[in-house]
Amino acid sequence: MHNFFNSDTNNTSTSLNEQYNSLKDNYEQIFIEAAESIRREIEKFKPKNPCANCKVQNCKIQKKDVFTDYPIGCQYRDWQKQILSFLDGEYKQKLKNTYKAIMDKKQDYSCSCCASCCKFATSEYSYEQLKQRAMRGDKYSADFVSVFVPYKTEEEVKLANPEYFELLNKILDDQKIYYYYCPKLEENLCSDYENRPDICKDFPHNPLKLLPSECSFNKWKEDINRQAMLLKAKTDIIVFYKTKLA
Ligand code: SF4
Ligand code: SF4
Image 1 (tube, protein in one colour):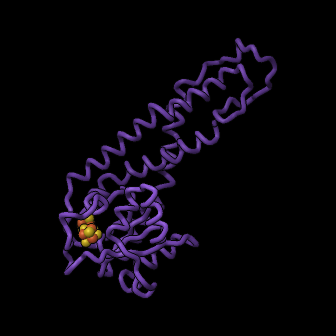
Image 2 (tube, protein in one colour):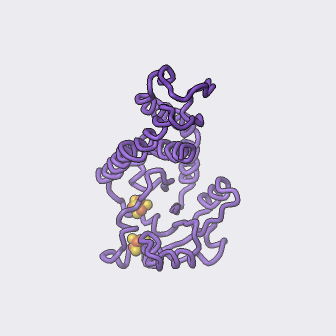
């Protein structure tokens, strides 16, 4: 689920592009760093020369790689099982703790009430799809449709935020995106503040989200940006390991 935001200054376009380019440019290096860090972790419990006492004769495997297809009875095969259990247990918990620390850090900053997040939100789901997800018990979707309604035309969207519209069109290729706004916003103030749902109270929900330049949580994002990208890279790499080793 994406949320992107409105702005009426030309600087925001640059800011959004800068945020996007920074994410894109830095992610490759951070991904390599994350992969190396995970490789070091799993090398720690790689068996030391198990072939010397191997009961499987003549396996002829030269490269003892983590993703090699080892025969039954081979200690490297047990190592692969250990890796899966480590990544799904201790390591996953470590990543969860990091995520919690990132989100807890947000409490050091506060909303400046610019209302940008009320004026412009996006989702990969249509309004109907969101309502169906809400009916199936998805809390985020239920919160979303309780406040946001879709913009009626593409022209309205373009007028509301031409820079963001242009940026999304550039980076999302063929992926469909739906645009929303909250009609409860009146003269830049929330008309139902006491009853606003968690989706409003907890914004921004994603540490890698692109934010408008006026959002006061940009400072939080700057603080945790590297840590959040590392976390994302590690999470993606774990999925890759699990798929390959399963
Ligand atoms: S309910 Fe209030 S805080 Fe939430 S999006 Fe609408 S105007 Fe903004
Ligand atoms: S400061 Fe950020 S969270 Fe607060 S209203 Fe503006 S965009 Fe939303």
